[in-house]
Length: 249
Image (cartoon, rainbow, N blue to C red):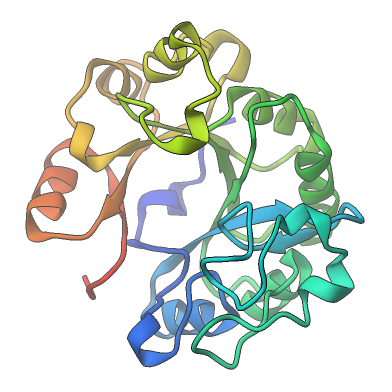
């Protein structure tokens, strides 16, 4: 299905409109409220709890954003939702609570996190939750093409996108082989994943794969994460919309 027309209509606040210095932490309900007030779309991340629910949180571990430590998926959802975010009054929200708070007021881009291990439990749970939110402006995305392909059946009716970049040098990808990284960077999985849109690292634009997706196939192209005037100019020239943080567009 083609990605919805609203997908690129307004800038997308990366993990909500957050400002740690002001006590508004990424992926919190406060960050979502700030994005809504600013008339921005919202991007958020979901992780799996030990009892297989979906919570809105970026990291695989709790250490950076909370006073707790250890893996998110080692804690049950009832415990996770009682964990406060550093420097804020917010706690880790479930995806259900996050969706209820947004209430369809602004478009939402949900990134399904993955360890590239074939585990589809988070994608399945996300699809189950979204089944109660049909008709709301929501799309899904992932760096993992296996997840993107699976969401076709696990979350029918919602557009799906691939997130990518030219070089996979982050620690999260150290376990992938050179050939796997090459396939990701060049979208060699395209026939299987069949994304409805593409989100590419802004510093890597322009590049052949996203250029062809946008110009030859007509797929919407987002750029992440835009933080500087130079990033913004690059995104404006080579993409259809930006995922931004650290400033107000």
